[in-house]
Amino acid sequence: MSKGAGRRVRWHPASVVLHWMTLLLILFQFWVAWPMTDETRDLLTRFELYQLHKSVGLTIAAFVVLRLVLRLVLRAPVPAPEHAGPWLRGGAGAVHAGLYLCVIALPLTGFLMVSSAPIQIPTFYFGWFAIPHAMSPDKAAYELMLRFHGWAGDLLIALGAAHFAAALVHVLVWRDGLLHRMWFGTSRGARLTRPSPVPQVPPP
Ligand code: HEM
Ligand code: HEM
Image 1 (cartoon, protein in one colour):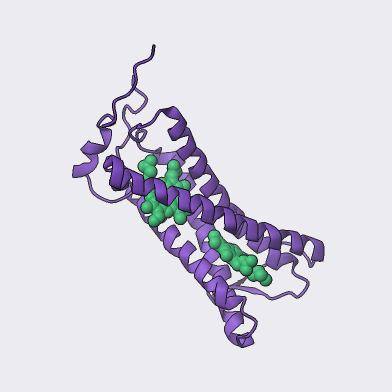
Image 2 (cartoon, helix red, strand yellow):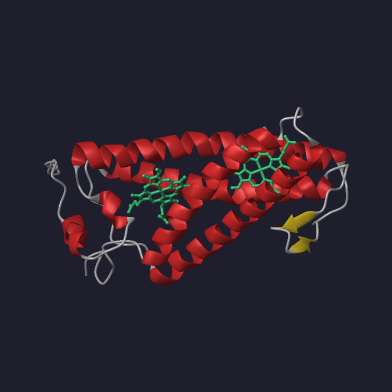
């Protein structure tokens, strides 16, 4: 039986919603981090922006967990069309794994950072309820988490750029309809199971 037998040709609508919501929320996180850490702004505004950053970050964590559960239950669609050998597919898989890692590491290090901060500021989830912090103040742990949070953010930008560039190549060069896999609908799904338009070199 072929590897893709019985599998969908596109992502489940719930995974599609979570993928694009995550992108929007990540963009918001990078945008809000800028005024929130700007020490020339008044403290109350910064406090509110921090609360928003923390709440949205924890929401992203919940979305990622949900997405991984969905991926496990519903399975990923059939493999994407192959254009340049299995190494490229391996590269795409590594970038996807790295993206998942970043969107798990960012909320985790962020939460541990605020939990261990020498000056304790409570975390209110969108102002609805307080989230208990995971540990008591610890300056060394705080500084470590702060550094990891920054690195994970830099890595997310690098991997996100590679992922975006790859999506552009699929759309503009290979024109294989891959982007439609991460959108709603059924009719164009048929295109996605077509073999690669680039001739494959037969094995010697
Ligand atoms: C995917 C989710 C997240 C992203 C993309 C993200 C991104 C960022 C970025 C880009 C910065 C600025 C880094 C810098 O100035 O060096 C930052 C700072 C910060 N983040 Fe996050 N973050 C996320 C989740 C969280 C969560 C869940 C928390 C806490 C519950 C959190 C707490 C903080 C704090 C306290 C800072 C300020 C650090 C400082 O004092 O410079 N973040 N975040
Ligand atoms: C404009 C930006 C983006 C575009 C155009 C885009 C496009 C896509 C497309 C078309 C796929 C499906 C690939 C396939 O079917 O094989 C995909 C998968 C994926 N995207 Fe994005 N994406 C973007 C941003 C992001 C961001 C910011 C993240 C960070 C979390 C992300 C994480 C992922 C992951 C982890 C997968 C693989 C899903 C899996 O295998 O479970 N994407 N993306």
